[in-house]
Amino acid sequence: MKLYVDIRKKTGDFNLDVTFECGSGTHAILGASGCGKSMTLKCIAGIETPDEGVIILNNKVLYDSKKKINLPPQKRSTGYMFQDYALFPNMTVRKNIEIAAKGNTVEKSYFSRFHLDGLEELYPYQLSGGQKQRTAMARMLAASPEMIMLDEPFSALDSHLKWKLEKEVKQTLEELNTITLFVSHDRDEVYRLCDTVGAMENGKLKEMKRVKEFFENPGSRVAALLSGCKNIAKARRISKNRVFVPDWNIELETKKEVPDDIGYVGIRAHYLKATDEIKGKNTFIIEDIEISEDPFEWNISFRCAGGTQYLQWKVSKEIWSLERMSLPKAFKISPENILILR
Image (cartoon, rainbow, N blue to C red):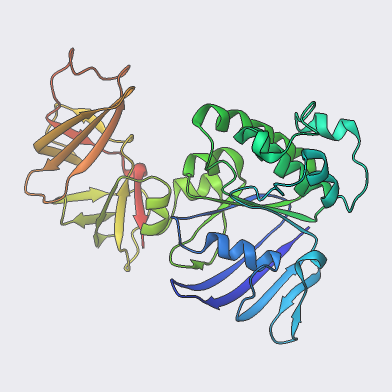
């Protein structure tokens, strides 16, 4: 199984420029709202037409601007689940699914697989958000597509239902073992569900990385922001393993070799370590500090001596207690936890 996408399309908000390939498994496009994620899926599905490029699924050319090939959606063998599920409001659950199965009768066991027993004769307005989601998934898979595209399928669900349905969808996708493209702006969702991920900004996507590699080494400022990195600042190279960060007014030692064209460094908020020692490498001496509280974490914002940009430290209340402990005098960061970014 293989999907190859290399397309460009001019739009009013951005110019889509997407190039990637992937095989069986679940692959995410991670990006902010309005950056081109849904447009990419629609181009693959045939709902939108690129200006130029190529889309190939399992050696079948779906689109080729030079060869004038542009297969209609019904001939692409792709399954696309919209954000709002797009169920037919005048059809029951059964009819919604059977129309995707080309009118064939769907066996009872199929409804059981998606926990739709007893809901077969209900209409979409009579379903909960989770039931609509499962119906949309069942309808999409009833058409036996060669690949699946999920467009933020959990965005309209509350956190409890979302967690439950995530597990069900993950199990279903693992059983199918097909190509799945998963669009999201939720990094935690992507980490739990996907095998690879690509970061999109203003319509541009150039590669997919393994999920753990993406979070451990995002590579660019945009990818680091999408992966949840809270502390990012401009940096310049001093030597092979040293950088200077003007906004933090600190020199940092890095484990990774620093390239000449480094643009930024990043530090994840959970990786900072509080200390009362004000000497040593990679030590941020605190000049100003602000504290805010979440249900289970403390958020500490601080500025280094001589620095202009605040950094964030996040710590569990089980590890650090404001009531029992004095405020730290400094923070340290290990060289291996410094992200080198373009």
